[in-house]
Length: 634
Image 1 (cartoon, one colour):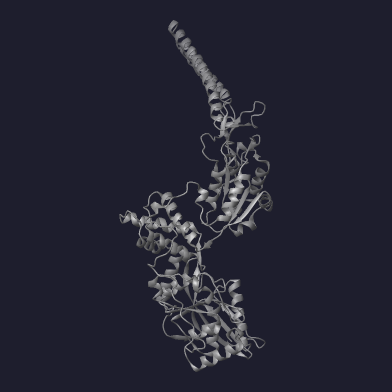
Image 2 (tube, one colour; image 1 turned 180 degrees about the horizontal axis):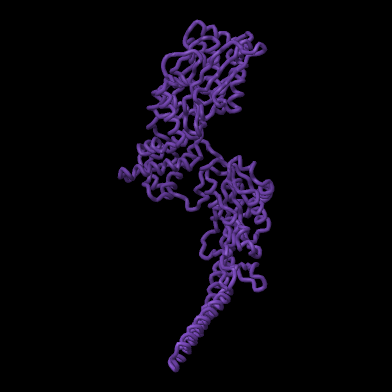
């Protein structure tokens, strides 16, 4: 490799077994104090925490937007802890003597609802005792009549009187039971405000419902007020109503939710038109809740505009961060996070310092950004629990470093398992080649999901143009819009360095066996390398893989998923990987993996070609022309 275009190999940024500063001195997580309040257990979302504290104090609604596993539901529960409990109320439903299909609603301070219901039950019980005495008197009278004059006629008449009396008393029992109210919402004994998770709730569960009564006549029916069931909006009265993926609610339900938020009360009626409950409609039932809605960026587009306007006008919108800076203070927070997970699980042992160091390294790796730690803590918590399960299985009293490493290997996401299978199958059928060289064929790199890399073979071929007017770039492999545009950008570089009319050619580019489709522009340098190799008839080394976006001026731009892509290349047996210079510090490999690969960070397309193409005189001439025509190479 010439001195002018020499590219130094990137060192492995992190090594397995090195001491990692965590900001706190401890031997096991048992020594780490876990905060009592949930709001103090939220990691890395300082802005969201401040908003939640303010919203709880002023009773404002909050919309949390972010990726799964970043702590949205935990913030909702934390808000419930911050709300006052002295204003909690019980809600009762009473029969309406004037219209039984419009039960009356009454609110009383918490714990008084039980006393009111018990008082009415005592009264009803007294009436039941009177009816028992009446039945005993009738039975005694019949027996006395039989004793004085026993005959078949007297016996039949006596049985008829007893049956008639039982039916009459039964009907009387139903009428007196109507007087007993039903306790819809019971907040007695609560030490914190209600937190109701209404994620995925249907209309009846969210807004309340009235049960169907199959016995609507003959005095056998259940009174309307006893069939009333509170909705989650009512059970969240004076508390927090949490709804994740709020856009999954129908527009009609979102409109009803908006009405409940505006009026702070919402009547309960039967949700099914085919049910007798649809005839019942209570007086408006109090539902003065604080809404904490959550979702991802797509949620905003699918939300009812008026509902979002209500939240924005009378509350706050918060975007949840997915990473935080890799500082000593934030590493200390991750130590606290591990201690919290151990305490919350209750079935796994505490972690040693070495084990916590590996969790922090995994957080560095999963962040996908240099100098950051991931805040997708649900996934990180999965590794904590898997490592704890492994330690329990081995009979250990503490979770050690080796247990965490084993958990990382064992608890692979489905995408990673699919990627491993993909690489194994492609190598078996020689779709992925790791030796020799070939014209027009390059090993690209891609990601499945967020943390799973795959090797993506790409081939290019040049043929005379089928049309006399203009040649075309023909791409196959289920490419998305961004990927197609990236391929078009490559043609700008080719036209510039080639210095001749390439419209005489049709350039075919194939992403081999990409049945799942390809999206993004991280394969740009791979496509450019394959096409240039085909045009110039220069072989590409098959022990090299590459990833990187490419500008029309030939600059190699940063991409995502650098570490999983490199790990995929290692697993495929590839010896060298080309990545953008900007991603150099995004790579987190253990020492054993780093020893198996040479990493070349590059800034321009000529540096890519110098590494990937076989050394020939044609290559030297090609690089000279590219350096002369592309300003970034000068």
